[in-house]
Image (tube, rainbow, N blue to C red; front, side, top):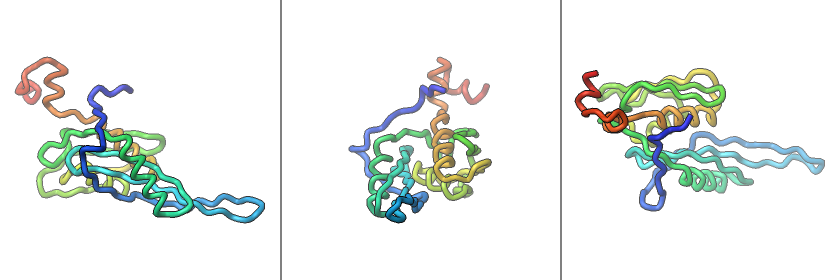
Length: 172
């Protein structure tokens, strides 16, 4: 599904906070024994509407995380955040994971599970209700959450797309 409202962002002009979502030790068995390496999924965001995720793999944890951060900075998207919450309800899917994101009133906080929480906090959402259904695999949950956020549209974009007045978007 092609998204018109997805805006790619250059990472050079923004300072990011990174969050480690999960790290896994991966074992490769060879005739010489077991070889361990690490896989890390990282979410970066400026807590003001820009977020990205990345996967890093290396022999050591620190280099896996560093590679994940570099990868995350390469695929950033801009997400509309209105008054600290998301503009509307949205379902996001990726593989076996399905997430539901719903706006919440001020003071609610981020009601979301592990991998979703990292993504939503990195975007800068302060109040949101979210539910993860299906697979709990952190990779799939992060991608499903990003998918839901990519589908978000703010009222200004909707008004421009429909070529109507902004007030008409709210009234109907």
